[in-house]
Length: 220
Image (cartoon, rainbow, N blue to C red; front, top):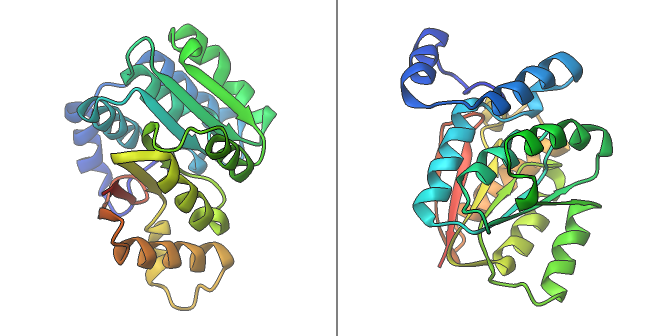
């Protein structure tokens, strides 16, 4: 979600002005997404991108795994924080949307860090496991079809190293997680992954109210 759920707009404006710096390339992706797609809310918020950058730097991330690229804002946010020999493995199924990202990745000077895999993400992740890449990623971001969140999470636990972090997006789902009349498959899937991570003794976890809510799960 390209805003932060529940935050007053005047306070959010202050936060954006004082708490982050959005590069011209990131701003261009955000503006293009609003102008050219019918679902701009699928894009993460600028404050979320800034948060992810800071976390990538704090963790010393060199290998980052992303499930759900859309128009490339999150991939660019993290790629900018990686060293020159860092790698983003970015999973998506849409040539149309990801093609919007590529010129901005190029102009930002990070295209060489981004390995875009256009295939069902579960297949890509399983292939990475089969290729012997378990435990080699420092950070993962899950922001794709909600019904497959559990599958992505389980594969992510294999691929992320101990001490590495899995971020799960949209875990507040615009407030729908507490609306018992909302029984959509996507909503019930988010409730299920929230409950699972909370009780999962393989990770330390918390939810922070940035964007549409992000779970941070650190692999033990």
